[in-house]
Amino acid sequence: MKKLTLPLTDEQINGLKAGESVLLTGTMITGRDAAHKRLFELAEKGEALPVNIDGETIYYVGPAPAKPGYAVGPAGPTSSYRMDKYAPKLLDMGLKAMIGKGRRNDDVKKAIVHNHAVYFAAIGGAAALIAKSIKKTEPICYEDLGTESIRMYYVEDFPCVVAIDSEGNDVYER
Image: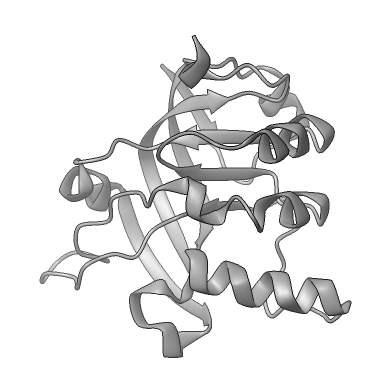
């Protein structure tokens, strides 16, 4: 199992192969479809985004409320296909990695290769386990979206699998 520090470097991304298990430590942002739609609409208008996505990893999550002693409640991945309409544009703007669950469409795969990025799959059904790796959370923007707002997470040993590597190899097609 590879241990990686976020934000990811191009060298780290080069070394990732579809199917590898990894543990991520560092900072990532969060966002689901409602937040993606807002970012996409701003980008389409040529307006500045309220969050710097250049070099970032985004986790598709809308966690449950936190229990005492935890930064977040159960925080399992959202189905990634819901972000497929928006992901290529955000990758073109510098996003380096995405974390979710399930297949991605061909446009997203092409954008991953074109932008030398990576797509990780988090373990669906393991929301409570994943929440243990999230040590701190801070709001960034779109707080009106509640748990779907964009937040900054500090994670330690966040478990996931390389689902699509920077060469376009896809575990869902093996």
